[in-house]
Amino acid sequence: ETFGGKFQSDNTDGRGVSGVATAATGTTYGVSGRSVSPSGSGVYGTSVDNAGVYGVASGASGLNYGGRFESAGTSGRGVFGFATAATGTTYGGRFVSNSTDGRGVYGLASAASGITYGGNFQSDSTIGTGVRGVANATTGSITVGGWFESAGTFGLGVLGYASAASGNTIG
Image (cartoon, rainbow, N blue to C red; front, side):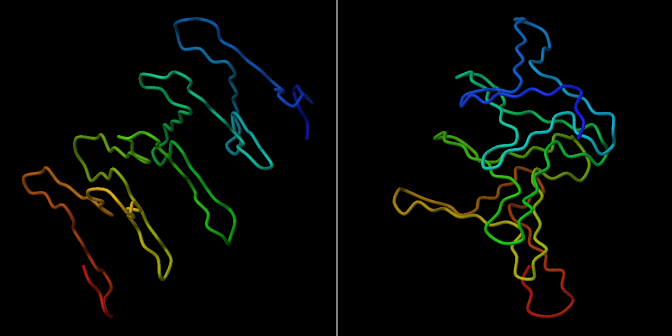
């Protein structure tokens, strides 16, 4: 490995690199990285037991993001998560909301036309499930494992389609 610069901290609360952008306005970056290689990364982080990259938005009110990722590619993904272990209960992505009005995942397809999906889920397992909803609360007024809604004049709350040519299928 070669480095343009290498920074190290052996302190138990240390940072190898620290960047601060102090301007109160404008598009500023505390740290910026760039790669021109088609297989490179602008910023690369690794960790033995925690997070390779860790972001915190500390504002207590308003819209903010602990991490923001964008892709301009025609087949791009803003975020790609990949759990590489072949066994165990693994997640390519895990999202948690602690709010009493929160959503663990929110998907939005904002195009006004075309065939779009707010969420697209798939399982390639012979005994897999594309979408699974579980309501774990054992007390309370009402719990729902899945909720589907359509506001369209020709809308369907749920549409099932079983595409197998034979066997016991249910749409």
